[in-house]
Length: 84
Image (tube, rainbow, N blue to C red; front, side, top):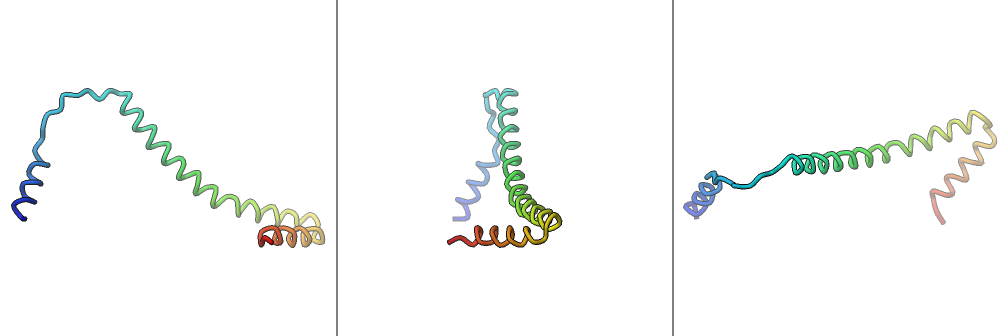
């Protein structure tokens, strides 16, 4: 068993020349894919954080404009969120 693991590790460490050309297009494609993944993760986190803050700011603005109407709006929004 130990000999088998040693041989596998040794074979993995041996460098074999590769006769292939990886051009700049391949590198640009990899960078674009990585950038796309990172941007999508950032956008998802931003959306999760932004929309509750936006809703809270909208409620605060409504309260400042007309306290009586804002109470009714708050109740309506809470009724919508709680569902049937």
